Length: 332
Ligand SMILES: Cc1cc2nc3c(=O)[nH]c(=O)nc-3n(C[C@H](O)[C@H](O)[C@H](O)COP(=O)(O)OP(=O)(O)OC[C@H]3O[C@@H](n4cnc5c(N)ncnc54)[C@H](O)[C@@H]3O)c2cc1C
Ligand code: SF4
Picture 1: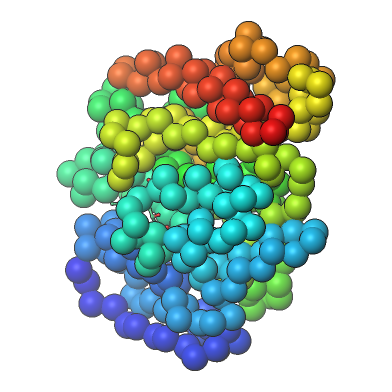
Picture 2: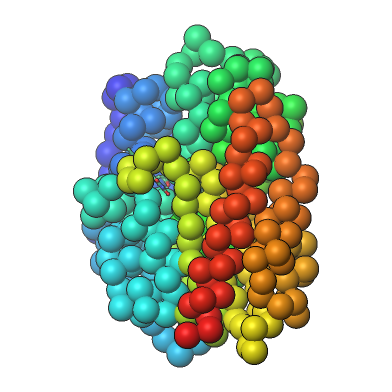
């Protein structure tokens, strides 16, 4: 690992000021569970880090009447186990406790989770591999290479890397927003506008500036919370990233779908909202056939590579199963 400077401001305002005055390339450090990993691999080489992990202002969890509010520094485990999340928003809780391991969830924060980088092995593998994300213009070794876990949706000629996180998928289904602070003031970014597709600039993964700090994540209260699930299919039942996942939240009355939200994970270059599939299910009877059809529509635009085509059918079934589970919960 290259030497780097370490700063641990004692307050939120101190952290914002430290970011404003930081040398270019400085990174925010939260739990460090992925940033330190990438620094050891030489993929990230920040000259300095600003540690916000111990700031109490960022660690709060509030369940209000209108919204759930999670400080960016709240630990994944604490959010997953919060009664309002566990009981009222199973998709949020499941997306967290199906991620990583208990040790990691005890350390990792819900803010850091949003900005984790792809697990593409060529990206993490070092400079021997062509990778437009790590070295713009160098090419993409994954195209025509080992692309079994690479994206099917939102890809470009320059990059097919999968967005790996689970939490952002469930947040997307609930229309969450992210409050950020920076030297130019505070602003709010919809989760749907946080991550970007690679296009011809895969190095750019999100819409935050380098000197902006995520303060909190807000989730509007909705009756669809209770009728929700996060289904994650992976190579082994724990400690693995998704081959396909779906966050589904529904309201159901007399067997007919009312509100309907579907987001896909593990299959796209960013958290992926399946709006057309939602539209087709809204107002339709909740039947296995309609659930399957929603999955087919969600994957209609999928572009398989060499070894990842099997995940289209896997994804369709994941959506269909998640719709069924969410429907059962909504009807209770
Ligand atoms: C072995 C392993 C398995 C994993 N499996 C899964 C999995 O199945 N599903 C899943 O979703 N995740 C998984 N992860 C990823 C893990 O959940 C993330 O490492 C973790 O959530 C990141 O949080 P952190 O607080 O440690 O962030 P850090 O590592 O500290 O930071 C991550 C990134 O976020 C930025 N950042 C952090 N906080 C802020 C902030 N407040 N404002 C602005 N930028 C910020 C950092 O600069 C950095 O770029 C796995 C990780 C490992 C190591
Ligand atoms: S898929 Fe993206 S991250 Fe992976 S090698 Fe290609 S350019 Fe790099």
